[in-house]
Every structure is written in structure tokens, then in C-alpha cells.
Length: 73
Image 1 (cartoon, one colour):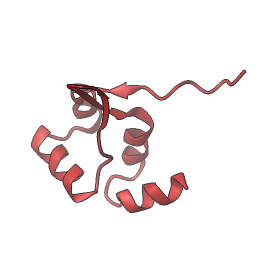
Image 2 (cartoon, rainbow, N blue to C red):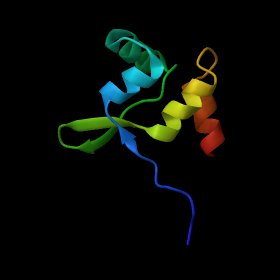
Image 3 (cartoon, helix red, strand yellow):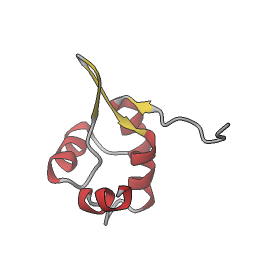
């Protein structure tokens, strides 16, 4: 058995609380590739992977989507 917990999906309210960003700033950062993108959960539901948000929180000024993609490979 794996002791690793599954990655939770965070709604926008939780992401805003954890990051301290405004909604507009969050979406601006997603568009620029300086914040993790949302993932589709259902037809009308999106959220962020908790692990991706935590990675961003470790180094918010220098996080980039390109770096995150390289780490996953």
C-alpha cells in the first residue's frame, strides 16, 4: 500500500485563501504561465491540483509553467 495521499482538487476560493491573490491576478498569472493551470473536474467544474499550488507557494516569484513541465518529465 502507498502511504502517499491522493492529490486533492482545490476550488478557487481555497486557492485565493492560500495564495492571497485576487481573482483577477490569479487568472492573469495563469494566462501568463506563472501560475499552475486549472484542470477540468466535470462539465462545469474546474479546480487546481493541491500539489501544483503548493509548488507555486514554495517559490512564487520564479515559478513558471515551463519549469513545472520539466519537473514532471
